[in-house]
Each structure stands twice: as structure tokens, then as C-alpha cells.
Image: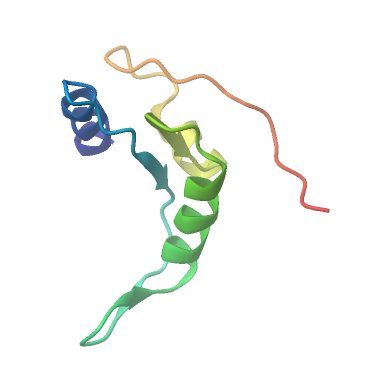
Length: 82
């Protein structure tokens, strides 16, 4: 999480680059070309909903970070796909 926040802070400097970062923890597998698995798939889905310049996390990650005094985390509710 620290890394994602640091990336967003740096990217806001001129010229601004508005990235979308999605984070989830879960099983990840690697082969010679890429990473895959639940952790990657859910992080990618979360990133798709993210506002430019923000970091969105899954409920699993939010539960881990919401009480840390160094980080402001705001719950956005539950997403219910159609």
C-alpha cells in the first residue's frame, strides 16, 4: 500500500500522470511471461472501477488497512455486478 500511495503522490507532480491502481491480496501464479490468479484478476477488476489518480483496494485489503493512523482509507461500499 505504501508503494501505491507513493506512486500516486509522485504522479501528481507536473506534468501530472493520472494512474488508476487496484490492489487485492490473493493467490498468484507466475510463468515466464506473466502473473495470473485470483489476486491479479481481482486487482485488475478493481483498477477498472478506480478514479484516475486514486488507489482502490478490495474489501480484504481495506479490512487490513482501515485502522492504520498513517493512511486515510474510506470505504466506498460493496460493488454488486449485474
